Image (cartoon, rainbow, N blue to C red; front, side, top):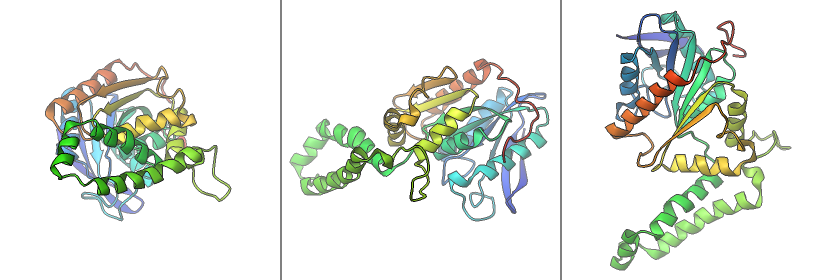
Length: 301
């Protein structure tokens, strides 16, 4: 059974959809979307996932951030979505009173928002993260060079296009040079991606560092799913291999990694969506019961 409900966040009215699952279920899944998009997801991904999990008895709650879909207010950036997530969990648990453990399932910057938020809320006992967003200018430039331009240079299609004249060498060279200019500062000054705190100018630490610190602080199990045909996933793997704060985080015992080599960013084909759903259910069933966090209250809202 599915029910729509409206709940408050920062003076606005947010819309959520509850998929009830089995009566008496103690574990539920909160879907945090990647933006800007709304609760249904690309190719109806989040809707289909929620229905699939609910048929297996797992309650699911998906919702629209402020300013997205049917929720009121100004659009919220993923780094400022913590209060929306908090209020969504409040609404979820109010409507599903037997649920005591919430697993957040997030794609792209929804995965990053979930990671940043999770350590603050004792009710969150697990994370499922798909193609997390760790965007920096240098990281994007490296990902383009390694996973796009290099692949093009090695492809027959590129050389055939060059011979036919459909590819313009001068334009391609200019584009490559612009990317190299963004790449070089990252090599000369790693502070562009990693530092130990706020800089002397008061600048906020780079996103990869903040997500790494949240990942390390959160003590629950994590399922990481990466697409093989996705620039954002490629940027994630490149960044975690370079940024010191990420050292050892993916090999923690509590982290399970799954790779889907042919999938794109949003897992647009049914076979890919079904595989993601199967991995999610398998992980939920076998991750074990984490230590109960105590009172179902926030450690720090």
